[in-house]
Image: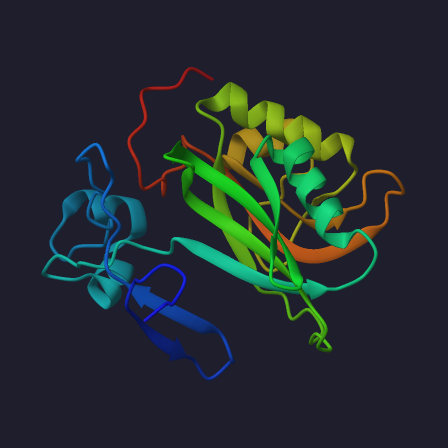
Length: 227
């Protein structure tokens, strides 16, 4: 039981040391609820067309899932100077994210909100928490996120990241978006350096796979977007 929120949870630690907290779904005050988590379904022709028959046969499910997805991801960052503030300012500039820095006990936490914001709560968020422990060397893990309400919003985000000089290509993958044309072609681009906007120095490293809502893997609903 979480003493602060009163919500029950199951704590799961994987072999890599990642910690997951599984909780009941959160209900909104207006009566609306989250949609079921999109999953790959066996026998679904649309999923076969999108992902290929081998993928669907290997990973597809024949029944629905009650798993709604990940509400937040939390990262530990060094307790050093203004790293927390730098991170919040970076996301506000680069991704037009709703951000806040709060004090929780002796730690400052940067909250980076994504999606809809209702009753002060965003659909999903990234948390960056100050930590005194020695942090492991970055091992290449990454996150994928969708930005903008349409293709123009995605283009604006790309230009802001490009302006910061941090557009990056991961040689492991086929998408090679180094400019706006490439980002439009792949409906995504990547960066991994989170900057101090005053000095240009990197304060945290995390690969971001930034996708347009017109990306074929977008799990929500979007209208037809003109390119």
